[in-house]
Length: 205
Ligand SMILES: Nc1ncnc2c1ncn2[C@@H]1O[C@H](COP(=O)(O)OP(=O)(O)O)[C@@H](O)[C@H]1O
Ligand SMILES: O=c1ccn([C@@H]2O[C@H](COP(=O)(O)O)[C@@H](O)[C@H]2O)c(=O)[nH]1
Image (cartoon, rainbow, N blue to C red; front, side, top):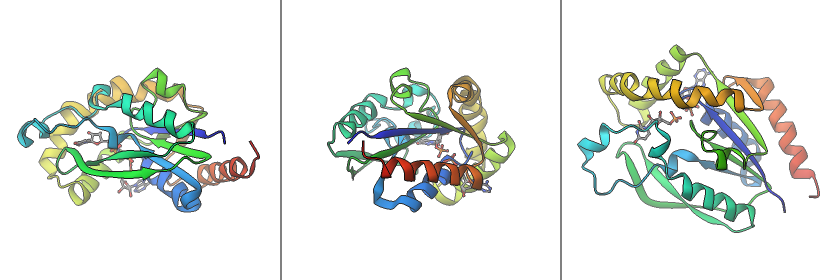
């Protein structure tokens, strides 16, 4: 079985997870999904107050080597134990999630097109686009509701690291994408990808 790897990048709050999760809901266990965020580095030795202030939008914040190894294993037909990140702790949890090899593997994250080795693994590269004001508004609501943050903290983090790193690292990868889609709720883009994945799953190779 040859796996097709699909990378889904875009700024924070653009709707990457929304788009990815809609595809996962449509195909359930027929496809695999990997979130680059789960590969944020382990920070066990660093106190919580320090972890809160770190730059999570720089490529070095991720253990991309581990992701590369695990994607290679999946492509060779082996299952992997993916790490699980806990945003409220700013650290990896002790959990793992078993991911089995599938014909179609989605890999989602803000910086998945930055590392050339990772970028070159993708058969299809999708960039989810949304205006910066909409992204930050969504992020404030989501981080307060789901990621254990307060509004002041989200705003400070956005201005000090998230925004500058977005323009330094995320935005420059947009032209490297095969397809740029306008929001994760885009129905046309969803149906096009769904049809394509159905064809991939039905093909013999
Ligand atoms: N087009 C949209 N309109 C309104 N809300 C949206 C839209 N896309 C995403 N959201 C919401 O915004 C938040 C961030 O979206 P998410 O998919 O998690 O973004 P990302 O994974 O790119 O950070 C979520 O709460 C999601 O439900
Ligand atoms: O401990 C952490 C780890 C990450 N973040 C932020 O998460 C986003 C990436 O996730 P999206 O779902 O794409 O928004 C990134 O911008 C980091 O700043 C964090 O706040 N704390």
